[in-house]
Image (tube, rainbow, N blue to C red):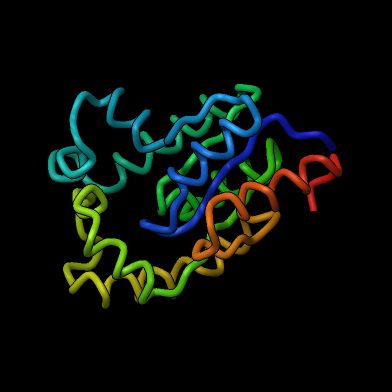
Length: 176
């Protein structure tokens, strides 16, 4: 099966946007981020959506963005960290493209979140410290990330190595 759509999944701060942009450039494809699609559509930040309408409304908007993007070709899509929470999203991604899971330890993710204020703009899911929240959310979502993914990539590797690995899979023309 030849794919013309790649989904990047994983927790916050695993590098989906960075890897996605590099991968899209290497392929000559378009890059997009489902969180950005939701923010543009809502006309406000994710934190504002959650505060005004709640997490379920945000998840509905996220699913709608995924559905819209799943019909496009030659696109690399970075998904929000919670995209895998809904089975319908996991199924849609697996059926319509190559799903790459970027993995990193909770310690690495917490460190990245603490030095990158853009990641901190996302509302807390648990109200706990960044380190505790990352560890808890990662534990809860790990089985869902694994269920969605066709392939795993270590997010602590250089971006170029991750891109090269995904390109090799694409060149074979078969989703693992």
